[in-house]
Amino acid sequence: GSSLIIMGSGEFAGGAVVNTMLSSATGALGSLFFRTAVWPGREWDISAALNGVLAGLVAITSGCPVVETWAALVIGLLAGIFYILASRFTIRVMRVDDPLDATPVHMFCGMLGLIMTGFFAKPEFVRRLNSDFQPEDEKIYSGVFYGGSGQLLASQIVEILVILCWVTLFIAPYFSFLNKMGWFRVSPDQEESGLDDSHHGGSAYPEIYAEDNIAKKNSNNFYELEKAIPEEKEGKKSTVDPDEEDHTLNKA
Image (cartoon, rainbow, N blue to C red; front, side, top):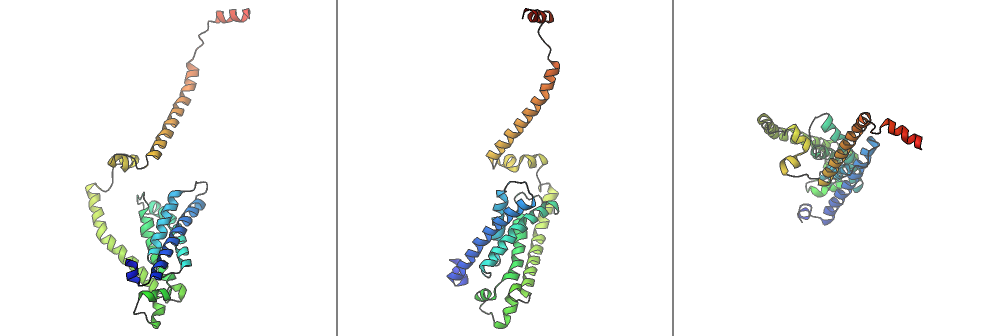
Protein backbone atom coordinates (compact mmCIF):
# COMPACT_ATOMS: atom_id res chain seq x y z
CA GLY A 1 0.00 0.00 0.00
CA SER A 2 2.70 2.50 0.97
CA SER A 3 4.66 1.70 -2.20
CA LEU A 4 1.61 2.41 -4.36
CA ILE A 5 1.08 5.76 -2.65
CA ILE A 6 4.71 6.78 -3.12
CA MET A 7 5.04 5.60 -6.69
CA GLY A 8 1.45 6.17 -7.80
CA SER A 9 1.53 3.11 -10.06
CA GLY A 10 0.83 -0.52 -9.30
CA GLU A 11 2.81 -1.56 -12.35
CA PHE A 12 5.82 0.44 -11.17
CA ALA A 13 5.64 -1.03 -7.67
CA GLY A 14 5.29 -4.51 -9.17
CA GLY A 15 8.43 -3.98 -11.21
CA ALA A 16 10.34 -3.03 -8.05
CA VAL A 17 9.14 -6.22 -6.35
CA VAL A 18 10.14 -8.40 -9.30
CA ASN A 19 13.58 -6.79 -9.45
CA THR A 20 14.05 -7.39 -5.73
CA MET A 21 13.17 -11.07 -5.98
CA LEU A 22 15.35 -11.66 -9.06
CA SER A 23 18.34 -9.93 -7.49
CA SER A 24 18.09 -12.06 -4.36
CA ALA A 25 17.98 -15.23 -6.49
CA THR A 26 21.09 -14.40 -8.53
CA GLY A 27 22.80 -13.22 -5.34
CA ALA A 28 22.39 -16.70 -3.87
CA LEU A 29 23.66 -18.39 -7.03
CA GLY A 30 26.58 -16.02 -7.40
CA SER A 31 27.86 -16.48 -3.86
CA LEU A 32 27.30 -20.25 -3.87
CA PHE A 33 29.13 -20.96 -7.14
CA PHE A 34 31.86 -18.37 -6.62
CA ARG A 35 32.75 -19.67 -3.16
CA THR A 36 33.01 -23.22 -4.52
CA ALA A 37 35.11 -22.06 -7.49
CA VAL A 38 37.52 -20.04 -5.36
CA TRP A 39 37.94 -22.72 -2.70
CA PRO A 40 37.72 -26.01 -4.64
CA GLY A 41 37.28 -29.21 -2.70
CA ARG A 42 34.77 -27.66 -0.31
CA GLU A 43 31.23 -28.86 0.01
CA TRP A 44 28.44 -26.61 -1.28
CA ASP A 45 28.10 -23.95 1.42
CA ILE A 46 24.44 -23.25 2.18
CA SER A 47 25.33 -20.40 4.54
CA ALA A 48 27.11 -18.63 1.67
CA ALA A 49 24.00 -19.02 -0.49
CA LEU A 50 21.72 -17.65 2.25
CA ASN A 51 23.95 -14.63 2.82
CA GLY A 52 24.06 -14.26 -0.96
CA VAL A 53 20.27 -13.84 -0.89
CA LEU A 54 20.71 -11.01 1.62
CA ALA A 55 23.53 -9.51 -0.44
CA GLY A 56 21.28 -9.42 -3.51
CA LEU A 57 18.43 -7.86 -1.55
CA VAL A 58 20.68 -5.18 -0.05
CA ALA A 59 22.35 -4.33 -3.37
CA ILE A 60 19.08 -3.90 -5.28
CA THR A 61 17.44 -1.74 -2.61
CA SER A 62 18.85 1.49 -4.02
CA GLY A 63 17.85 0.93 -7.63
CA CYS A 64 14.91 -1.50 -7.56
CA PRO A 65 12.40 1.02 -8.99
CA VAL A 66 14.71 2.51 -11.62
CA VAL A 67 16.54 -0.45 -13.20
CA GLU A 68 15.40 -2.97 -15.78
CA THR A 69 14.89 -6.67 -15.06
CA TRP A 70 18.11 -7.77 -16.72
CA ALA A 71 20.02 -5.19 -14.68
CA ALA A 72 18.51 -6.55 -11.45
CA LEU A 73 19.83 -10.01 -12.38
CA VAL A 74 23.31 -8.59 -13.00
CA ILE A 75 23.32 -6.53 -9.79
CA GLY A 76 22.32 -9.54 -7.72
CA LEU A 77 24.97 -11.74 -9.31
CA LEU A 78 27.68 -9.15 -8.71
CA ALA A 79 26.51 -8.70 -5.13
CA GLY A 80 26.73 -12.43 -4.43
CA ILE A 81 30.32 -12.55 -5.69
CA PHE A 82 31.24 -9.27 -4.01
CA TYR A 83 29.90 -10.54 -0.68
CA ILE A 84 32.36 -13.47 -0.67
CA LEU A 85 35.29 -11.16 -1.40
CA ALA A 86 34.14 -8.59 1.16
CA SER A 87 33.77 -11.31 3.79
CA ARG A 88 37.41 -12.33 3.33
CA PHE A 89 38.48 -8.67 3.33
CA THR A 90 36.61 -7.98 6.58
CA ILE A 91 38.31 -10.85 8.41
CA ARG A 92 41.78 -10.92 6.84
CA VAL A 93 42.44 -7.21 6.20
CA MET A 94 40.15 -5.21 8.48
CA ARG A 95 40.58 -7.81 11.27
CA VAL A 96 36.94 -7.40 12.27
CA ASP A 97 35.35 -10.29 14.15
CA ASP A 98 32.02 -10.49 12.32
CA PRO A 99 30.64 -14.05 12.59
CA LEU A 100 27.32 -13.05 11.01
CA ASP A 101 28.96 -11.32 8.02
CA ALA A 102 26.82 -8.24 8.66
CA THR A 103 29.61 -5.92 7.50
CA PRO A 104 30.14 -7.48 4.05
CA VAL A 105 26.41 -8.01 3.48
CA HIS A 106 25.00 -4.68 4.64
CA MET A 107 27.88 -2.22 4.38
CA PHE A 108 29.85 -3.41 1.36
CA CYS A 109 26.91 -4.72 -0.67
CA GLY A 110 24.93 -1.60 0.24
CA MET A 111 27.72 0.55 -1.20
CA LEU A 112 27.84 -1.67 -4.28
CA GLY A 113 24.10 -1.20 -4.80
CA LEU A 114 24.38 2.58 -4.65
CA ILE A 115 27.17 2.56 -7.21
CA MET A 116 25.28 0.15 -9.49
CA THR A 117 22.32 2.56 -9.54
CA GLY A 118 24.65 5.18 -10.98
CA PHE A 119 25.37 2.79 -13.86
CA PHE A 120 22.01 1.06 -14.48
CA ALA A 121 19.35 3.75 -13.76
CA LYS A 122 17.01 4.01 -16.75
CA PRO A 123 15.90 7.63 -17.42
CA GLU A 124 12.34 6.57 -18.27
CA PHE A 125 11.95 4.98 -14.82
CA VAL A 126 13.66 7.87 -13.03
CA ARG A 127 11.23 10.27 -14.70
CA ARG A 128 8.30 8.48 -13.01
CA LEU A 129 9.77 9.26 -9.60
CA ASN A 130 10.51 12.90 -10.32
CA SER A 131 7.67 15.17 -11.41
CA ASP A 132 10.17 18.00 -12.10
CA PHE A 133 12.12 15.88 -14.58
CA GLN A 134 12.84 17.92 -17.70
CA PRO A 135 14.15 16.61 -21.05
CA GLU A 136 17.38 18.55 -20.56
CA ASP A 137 17.88 16.77 -17.22
CA GLU A 138 17.99 13.30 -18.78
CA LYS A 139 21.77 13.05 -18.84
CA ILE A 140 21.94 14.11 -15.19
CA TYR A 141 19.48 11.49 -13.92
CA SER A 142 20.51 8.66 -16.25
CA GLY A 143 22.87 5.85 -15.41
CA VAL A 144 26.23 5.76 -17.19
CA PHE A 145 25.11 2.79 -19.32
CA TYR A 146 22.16 4.86 -20.62
CA GLY A 147 24.21 7.82 -21.75
CA GLY A 148 24.29 9.60 -18.40
CA SER A 149 26.87 12.29 -17.68
CA GLY A 150 28.06 10.56 -14.51
CA GLN A 151 26.47 13.09 -12.18
CA LEU A 152 24.08 10.49 -10.79
CA LEU A 153 27.00 8.14 -10.15
CA ALA A 154 28.92 10.95 -8.46
CA SER A 155 25.97 11.77 -6.21
CA GLN A 156 25.73 8.09 -5.21
CA ILE A 157 29.40 8.09 -4.25
CA VAL A 158 28.91 11.27 -2.22
CA GLU A 159 26.02 9.56 -0.42
CA ILE A 160 28.31 6.66 0.52
CA LEU A 161 30.92 9.05 1.92
CA VAL A 162 28.33 10.99 3.93
CA ILE A 163 26.90 7.80 5.45
CA LEU A 164 30.39 6.52 6.35
CA CYS A 165 31.27 9.83 8.02
CA TRP A 166 27.98 10.00 9.92
CA VAL A 167 28.26 6.45 11.22
CA THR A 168 31.92 6.87 12.17
CA LEU A 169 31.21 10.14 13.99
CA PHE A 170 28.54 8.61 16.21
CA ILE A 171 29.66 4.99 16.57
CA ALA A 172 33.46 5.31 16.98
CA PRO A 173 33.23 7.13 20.36
CA TYR A 174 30.69 4.57 21.57
CA PHE A 175 32.90 1.61 20.63
CA SER A 176 35.94 3.34 22.13
CA PHE A 177 34.08 3.76 25.42
CA LEU A 178 33.07 0.08 25.45
CA ASN A 179 36.67 -0.93 24.74
CA LYS A 180 37.98 1.35 27.51
CA MET A 181 35.57 -0.21 30.01
CA GLY A 182 36.47 -3.74 28.94
CA TRP A 183 32.95 -4.41 27.64
CA PHE A 184 33.78 -4.51 23.96
CA ARG A 185 34.79 -8.19 23.84
CA VAL A 186 34.14 -11.25 25.91
CA SER A 187 36.94 -13.46 27.27
CA PRO A 188 38.77 -15.88 24.94
CA ASP A 189 37.18 -18.85 26.74
CA GLN A 190 33.70 -17.48 26.09
CA GLU A 191 34.59 -16.80 22.46
CA GLU A 192 35.70 -20.41 22.11
CA SER A 193 32.58 -21.90 23.71
CA GLY A 194 30.27 -19.40 22.00
CA LEU A 195 28.01 -16.72 23.45
CA ASP A 196 24.92 -18.86 22.97
CA ASP A 197 26.27 -21.27 25.54
CA SER A 198 28.04 -18.82 27.88
CA HIS A 199 25.49 -15.98 27.89
CA HIS A 200 22.16 -17.45 26.79
CA GLY A 201 22.13 -20.85 28.45
CA GLY A 202 22.17 -23.08 25.39
CA SER A 203 23.49 -23.67 21.91
CA ALA A 204 21.74 -22.07 18.93
CA TYR A 205 22.52 -25.20 16.92
CA PRO A 206 22.22 -28.10 19.40
CA GLU A 207 22.40 -30.82 16.75
CA ILE A 208 25.68 -29.46 15.35
CA TYR A 209 27.02 -28.94 18.86
CA ALA A 210 26.16 -32.52 19.76
CA GLU A 211 27.73 -33.92 16.59
CA ASP A 212 30.87 -31.88 17.26
CA ASN A 213 31.17 -33.22 20.79
CA ILE A 214 30.60 -36.81 19.64
CA ALA A 215 33.25 -36.42 16.94
CA LYS A 216 35.75 -34.97 19.41
CA LYS A 217 34.99 -37.66 21.96
CA ASN A 218 35.40 -40.45 19.40
CA SER A 219 38.63 -38.86 18.17
CA ASN A 220 40.00 -38.66 21.72
CA ASN A 221 38.93 -42.23 22.49
CA PHE A 222 40.63 -43.47 19.34
CA TYR A 223 43.82 -41.63 20.26
CA GLU A 224 43.82 -43.07 23.79
CA LEU A 225 43.13 -46.58 22.46
CA GLU A 226 45.90 -46.26 19.86
CA LYS A 227 48.27 -45.08 22.55
CA ALA A 228 47.32 -47.86 24.97
CA ILE A 229 47.67 -50.81 22.57
CA PRO A 230 51.49 -50.66 22.18
CA GLU A 231 51.86 -50.19 25.94
CA GLU A 232 49.68 -53.21 26.56
CA LYS A 233 51.71 -55.29 24.11
CA GLU A 234 54.99 -54.29 25.73
CA GLY A 235 53.80 -54.85 29.29
CA LYS A 236 51.95 -58.11 28.64
CA LYS A 237 53.77 -61.27 29.79
CA SER A 238 52.89 -64.88 29.07
CA THR A 239 51.08 -66.57 31.94
CA VAL A 240 51.78 -70.07 30.58
CA ASP A 241 54.49 -72.01 32.41
CA PRO A 242 57.31 -72.95 29.93
CA ASP A 243 57.52 -76.55 31.27
CA GLU A 244 53.76 -76.92 30.90
CA GLU A 245 53.95 -75.54 27.40
CA ASP A 246 56.65 -78.12 26.41
CA HIS A 247 54.59 -80.90 27.96
CA THR A 248 51.55 -79.88 26.01
CA LEU A 249 53.47 -79.78 22.73
CA ASN A 250 55.06 -83.24 23.35
CA LYS A 251 51.63 -84.65 24.16
CA ALA A 252 50.27 -83.31 20.92
